[in-house]
Image (cartoon, rainbow, N blue to C red):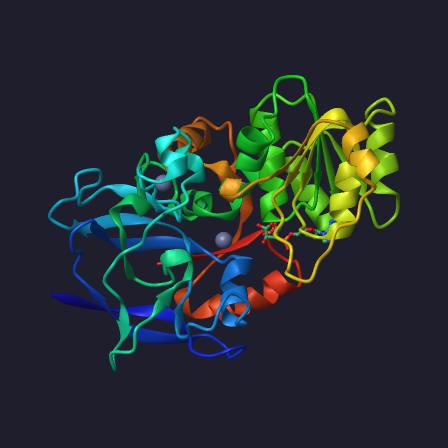
Amino acid sequence: MTHQVRAVVARGKGAPVSLETIIVPDPGPGEALVRIEACGVCHTDLHYREGGINDDFPFLLGHEAAGVVESVGEDVADVAPGDFVILNWRAVCGQCRACLRGRPWYCFDTHNAKQKMTLTDGTELSPALGIGAFAEKTLVAAGQCTKVDRAASAAAAGLLGCGVMAGIGAAINTGNVGRGDSVAVIGCGGVGAAAIAGAGLAGAAKVIAVDIDDRKLETAKKLGATHTVNSKDVDAVEAIGALTGGFGADVVIEAVGRPETYKQAFYARDLAGTVVLVGVPTPEMKLELPLLDVFGRGGALKSSWYGDCLPSRDFPMLIDLYLQGRLDLDAFVTETIALDEVEKAFERMHHGDVLRSVVVL
Ligand code: APR
Ligand code: ZN
Ligand code: ZN
């Protein structure tokens, strides 16, 4: 059997997305069919539409999603119809060298559904990040579904599927922020704001938010920033130094993805401190640093892939903290929109008006 559902498709480079009817197959072995309840709009979706990821048009966009499992393939045991799940793009394989060494959060061989979703004329769709959730229903690998408490709002929960998890994980997993640490976060969009919330969860004593947009600094305060720095007006490195006794922060999280802000992170860190790069650079960007400074300042320079998250460990835990009122995921949902408003949401995102627009179905 197949399902005909409405979905947001990017048909060609730079062209506005369109609402289309697509065909979704019933789940085969290892697969799950999920009825989507909410899906956030992320920069990566826009990046796909602009042809910045690859040329495999048409794309089925959307990947920060939560919904209810409608049916599963015959051999699927981990999730069952009726489960409320967050979709992830790290379905761990259990077999690769990372998994076999007990580090599944790095899994180098994640997987997606084998069967293809198509347009009504049979053209195969490429789902964004192997998910494709700006759709009433989508087909994923069962391992891409993580069951969480049904009491959570779908709009808030879905955001853990990508940017918000990346930010929280940059602080708690990659940066290993601990009680009493000083933390600075450069760039306070959806990802950076989540890193601020994550630093607070981990017990940071001081959380310094740095951005060039005062609106973002206001949200950062709501999520637990103890200090804010507008780096359009002042030097970020000096300001972070002044707020940390002249030493720099124990952990500095770069959530922009640019060489200038990476350098700020590098020099705004205390000796033996940690820099976490969670912002994603573009291919032409280069970084130049005196090698003596890399050596002389010690510590760790780390990159954070998807917050080094393990969905089965991190999603249920973060949803529990949300339901206890200890993690304000609702603060990331700037607006909820309909499926046919994704193009408008891209526009607002481009202007920096929102942390996240979330499609609610
Ligand atoms: N200094 C400080 N902040 C900056 C600078 C700068 N030079 N340039 C931009 N910013 C701020 C913006 O004002 C914005 O608040 O960085 C923030 C970026 O946020 P978003 O555009 O909302 O992006 P976000 O979804 O948070 O993702 C940030 O992480 O996962 C990656 O691909 C993603 O590279 C992107 C980054
Ligand atoms: Zn693996
Ligand atoms: Zn994303």
